[in-house]
Length: 405
Ligand SMILES: Nc1nc2c(ncn2[C@@H]2O[C@H](COP(=O)(O)OP(=O)(O)OP(=O)(O)O)[C@@H](O)[C@H]2O)c(=O)[nH]1
Picture 1 (cartoon, rainbow, N blue to C red):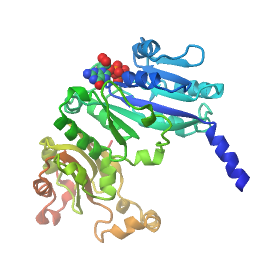
Picture 2 (cartoon, helix red, strand yellow; picture 1 turned 180 degrees about the vertical axis):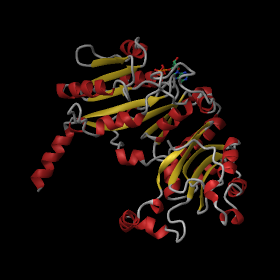
Picture 3 (cartoon, rainbow, N blue to C red; picture 1 turned 60 degrees about the horizontal axis):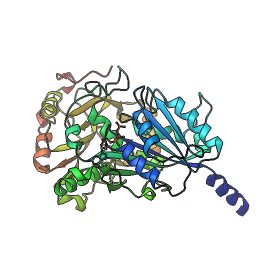
Picture 4 (cartoon, rainbow, N blue to C red; picture 1 turned 135 degrees about the vertical axis):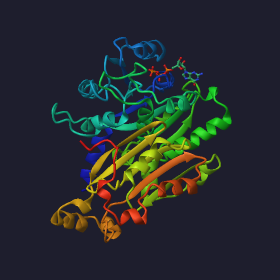
């Protein structure tokens, strides 16, 4: 047994560590990359720089400013697409090649500003069956870093613009909004770098830090100016864990174990869970959503609409972007035999089972600044069916939400 574990250790030590930098356009990824490269303390690195356009300007900047040795190190440009989608296979092959060369100590990747971190992390975590490449045998994803632009954050967060409108989309079918992308990048990372701190007043920085901590409580939050960061913060950190990162968003933590973070309270940042075993009246909820309270920065959860008794609905809001759609069947709507199996397996679900409605419920997390929680709860309660409405046939109420199909 002893020998076996020594063997395993040796094996894992030979895997090449990888750090991935994500963050919206212009946040400072290249600046950070160059700073880290210039302070890499003898590490032999291979750098992959991804750019959406044909001309890879960031690669030129790193070639010029990163001080990479032309003989011992390598700079790979991946252009005209995004490593999280169109260039995913190319990324797999490039990283496999680099790892097989066995002459680098580290792989550093700068993704495009519109890249989502989850698919990039998946590339390193799971076997790709189509290509037959399993990067997890060759590499060790060490750290997922997200860079946030302290100066432009609120402008981008509240702009309501899509990437297409800003001519920044990965393709013509790319319907993502800027804020949804920001949220995806913040909610999945190990280290959050708040860059361009020189351009923002201390008080505003503290508030922004509070919001970022509420959105992403697990990641280490580091302030920087011009990307000046101690390389140790993002290299050889052993911070990455796919499961943990996937469950690290503030709304998930709040949903699982509601608790206010005293640290952030002084900036007026708070979160709460709204939970009611009673369906929403579709029209009243629609009207509520059309007048979304400005102080709510992020909301996410499951909605029970009176008109949709079989399907739970998913609500996700970040800034002005609100998404609503089917989340899956209520267990209570499944055939009896199937329901029994699930209830036997999921004790928590069985414990919370309602005699009349089963698992149907509304459960929403709200994160915001200066939230008037009582008022919000009251206004949401007003959107639920009243006792009188509950006694009627509520399945036929008017429902203007997008249909499931
Ligand atoms: N004032 C200020 N400017 C900064 C800071 N960090 C970077 N910049 C500038 O911001 C601009 C964008 O920085 P980059 O490092 O190219 O940002 P990026 O995230 O790589 O940008 P894309 O590759 O286009 O997504 C450059 O002009 C930098 O010089 C900072 O901390 N303060």
